Image (cartoon, rainbow, N blue to C red; front, side, top):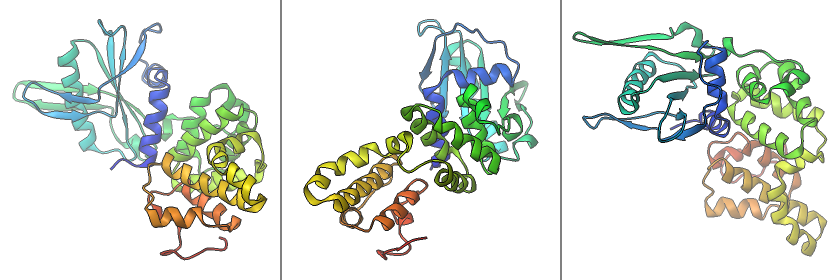
Length: 307
């Protein structure tokens, strides 16, 4: 099952289709047209004997009726020779389908990515297929420690945090950057990046947020706006404390829904009926990196007074 990091990076790519094309140019030295319209194609690839393979994201360049080139973008939390071999076959399937150039790029936070060669060959009888891919690992992603540098290129900033967010100076620069962005942009960028970062980096980002971001700053409030709005009406009816609790509970549920985490009825009731603001804050922090509903709780339905 794909990890939250995998899904978040793919989401970033699909929202910014120019990112893999730019990396192909800048990291791979591949001269691609700068005026090509970009659009996402189906990731399920099938050859003529009905074998099916899946690519994370396929970006087509050129008009739909006459594609100029195709790009397979693979997001790998951990690189492997098996994945490289599989992608050779996927690239060949795509070339047979389109009869146009195919490019392959791997984007990975794997610190060992540099050990994998960019050139892979598959031989069968007298036929040899060679793939020259572009592998963008941590060694190819700059370590940005200045918020002004990050502001000049937000996508590279997100990748820098993905690869190097465990470094205090990178985390601090990123959080400072968010204070200078419009609230919507800051919340969106933080959402991508917190999911893409490794657990150690996520913890550091959360700790840094508490130092540099006021609780009521525009972008922090915007991050939980939907959840707070859901509790507003109840807050007006039941008093300020219950209203804040309802808003916090709704925020927890909103983040869980965003992360695709199933909330059973008993857990839903436990969250929505909780009036302990400190406990709700703990649950909200945990929801940012949870992969299962039980990750919010110490054990069973035990209440927590703090961490």
